[in-house]
Length: 205
Ligand code: GAR
Image (cartoon, rainbow, N blue to C red; front, top):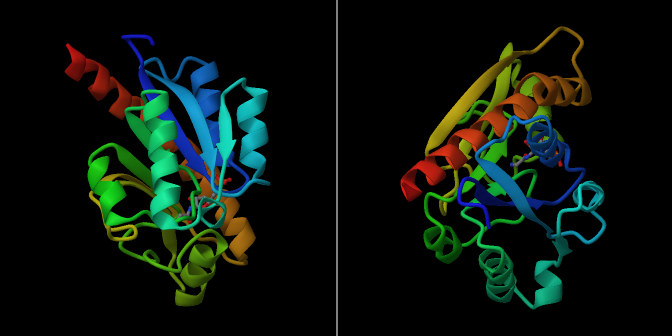
């Protein structure tokens, strides 16, 4: 284990473009204080797992159902995270809700990316395209992305960083999702990950 890099576990459920943004940052030297040590998916077929394997990063997949419930699922998650000594846990399109026990155990160590400017269009039921559908239905002219700490309240933890993105005439949920990813998520998330890893490394002294 490198003393100059914080180890990162990335939790995913789907395509993994945010995971890719972190891996790309790592590859071009934009993540000098961290290294992705593990990728875990709660869906065995998630394309994000392929992205991890392409980069030679250990990847595991197990669902809540397969584990026999929330508690056993979280125990397995914790075992995997602690097994690689991860100090930062990044939820990058991870759709399982984590319990208070789990978020307390890793308090201050779990962050999430959400595709809106919290407190708009967030909380239970707001994920993926649904967030952009809601933003368009409300008629907002500006949306964006938020990186925040994770606590027991869905999308309720302390905000770390936000980036605004314009909504354009004629936008569909899909075009808006893509613009929010390109102009906000894929920039903001790797920047926050590096900043937090640098802090972890500094704390070690
Ligand atoms: C991203 O837009 C992410 O912000 C969102 O799901 C998408 C995952 O895409 N997350 C949420 O909605 C969480 N509430 P990806 O798998 O390509 O990174």
